[in-house]
Image 1 (tube, helix red, strand yellow):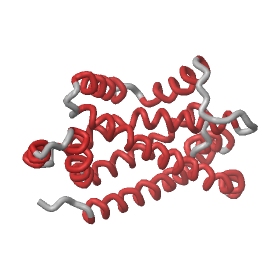
Image 2 (image 1 turned 30 degrees about the vertical axis):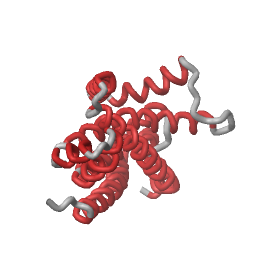
Image 3 (image 1 turned 90 degrees about the vertical axis):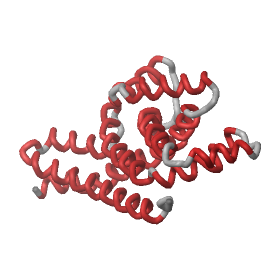
Image 4 (image 1 turned 180 degrees about the vertical axis):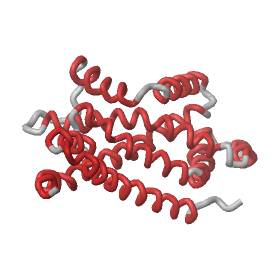
Length: 227
């Protein structure tokens, strides 16, 4: 156990810090892209509705591993897309950003569907009244529908964030040095202590996800829409 801790101990925080950063940047991007997709799905423009519907149905039903590999192999290795400057840490930084891009593309579909369910909670009379006053679709959506919908789906969005945190383990397939990659490397060198390694990584993820659940649970009660 002492040898395991000597090997694994100094790497635990950096690995989970990478997991936290993956979650943070992916969550922000997924929220922005998910809101845009949700707006397109309720847009009066047929082309936008068709694109958003097709995108959500295709991406949401595609395994996340394939999307991560597509960003790494398809976008970077085949098309030459780079998201980081050429320097000594290029590969690590570029793979991290490609993983974030993959998580954004995938998680945004769940954010979109969560928000769309929130739109149904907004009384339709409010939108009709706003349109009768001459407000455009963008104004009605941004000023009336979206703020209320966001407040009603805080808890479900928390569940999406927790799922995203656990999904970050897939970034290890392209070499991003997050928690699951640390677990894999430790299992290769300390396979006789498999249960302890699993327990350490599991506790780390439990701490992160329980904290996220607590924050979103508090926020859901704090900003709930009173009907």
